[in-house]
Length: 104
Image 1 (cartoon, helix red, strand yellow):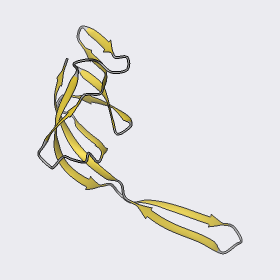
Image 2 (cartoon, helix red, strand yellow):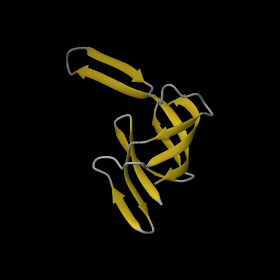
Image 3 (cartoon, one colour):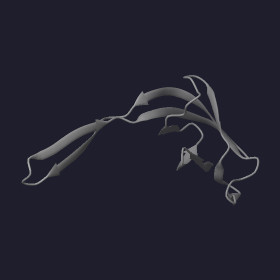
Image 4 (tube, one colour):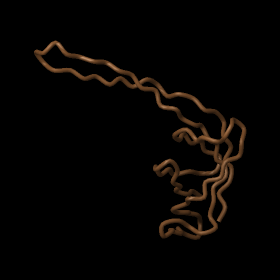
């Protein structure tokens, strides 16, 4: 059984017991329970149920394991022959969530 959920403007395929890395989920501390209610699709042995756009009554529950920062991405800008170059770095905040249950 798996589900497709939407959070932070992105869609993720999740299964029970799987680990999900999303953009930082503000308002939750490590160890808190989190519920995703924007479920787009649920697939099990009986078939797939697709929402328009979301399934009513469907939800995915998980536990927030940790908040952390991803590896550094470098942004490089330069102009050839003009002696211009800039290097900047960016580290995105992420949240690690362990999926516990898919309800439908």
